[in-house]
Length: 262
Length: 153
Length: 106
Image (cartoon, rainbow over all chains, first blue to last red; front, side, top):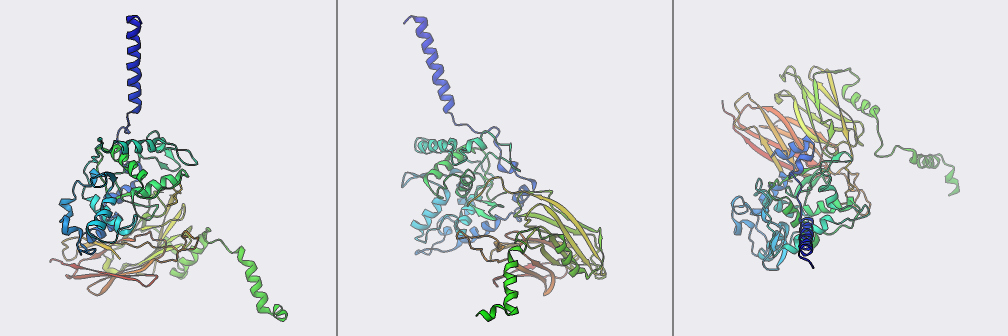
């Protein structure tokens, strides 16, 4: 090969590599906006009123459960963790994370279930049960106002990539991916509603459609049913991976738990 | 058995069973007429004036499952002149009488807020009974839409 | 039933104070169907009474048209110090009750 030709090939290869790398870069919507900016004024007011916010009823329940003795040891959460207002501050923003014991991804609900079963030796709490919703809302609320801070490193990178792949994968009879609504078309109308960026910062939320409090994984199931895809169960590995991707995607947005959404 | 078929009672029952499919569907638009009957039960036929009552609801509800409602009555709320009761009606709800609230001179302010369910776009009515025997009302129109995506959870 | 109550703090005699109550209750309409297609029976908080030093100052008769986790916001005039007592009942006969101490100055 002549020198100019070799140089041209090298430059082309470099350009191709950069383009490929750019295409692989996961993207966040710009600017980052909370779901509150896409609801009506009534939902915004409800969330911002600490008394009228219906989710606060679960926070009150969570506060009581925190003090309640449970399990064979008769220990409450407070027995080990003390005052949640101090010990749980900054906890929710780091989830989901790799559980040291199992080397698997675990979210806040999973951690509470684990504590309950292994350390308190008590009946495990089921997903969407009023008790798990109350406790996860109470713990997450202690990080209210703090920015989501999921870090992607060598330990959870494969989870992150799996979550991102799911986010971009077309699903269901309607053959739609999460990205098609929440990345490409946020701010536009879907029926009477304005599509949000689909962040996870406010969970668990009081959803007017559910007329009750619900988890992020329930919201995933709602979306899947919306595109007529198979509903995966709460706590499934796919949902955990997706939750990690969402936590990264919302990086910097403040926690709003307990959120109110339509 | 054959003898019974010709008894009046049996025939009446048979007719009632045949008429059943023609009864209004449960969720059907019951209509303002039914609300008028409910209002008449409260007023005893007395005239209902417009004014003095302010009924606030959002023009477009985020979700029909929960719509904030505020009603305010211009009344001095003294033992001589106060609001006795406030009645809320939503004609297109399967049960149009949403709620009745009973106040009194000790309320201080004739104002209350709550959250209601609205089964579709409609006009909501607030009927107020004053201690002097007069009745006042106000309405508010609300647009209620269904959620964009079907939620099977 | 979990309930939360908020009253205007530090009232003086004669002040109009705001009372807010939120009750955790599904307010089941009777129109929802379960997974087997059967109607879930109606069960709503149908009556709530608020008494101020044993005198009724507010009463609400509610139907399925009141949203889940019922929220009520009403007013009363602060008179003597004492107690606000809230009592409510649902269609199944389950009752709830809360008391809030009221300290009125002046």
